[in-house]
Image (tube, rainbow, N blue to C red):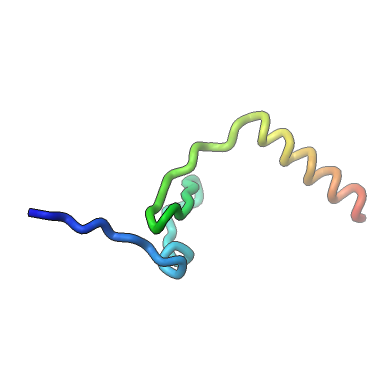
Amino acid sequence: MVTIPQYLSVEDYLAYDDGPDSQSELVAGKLVAMPPESRGNSRIAIRWRHDTVLYNS
């Protein structure tokens, strides 16, 4: 038996919900799980948000 891979369209991907704790991206029509955010990246994001709010107020 031959299985045909199922590819997602952009519309299907945007409608797909795999929960709030999961991140994924669409690569060549396939859904690929992304690794969790690193601690260093989280620190940068928090600092950027803080600076953005502080200087744009």
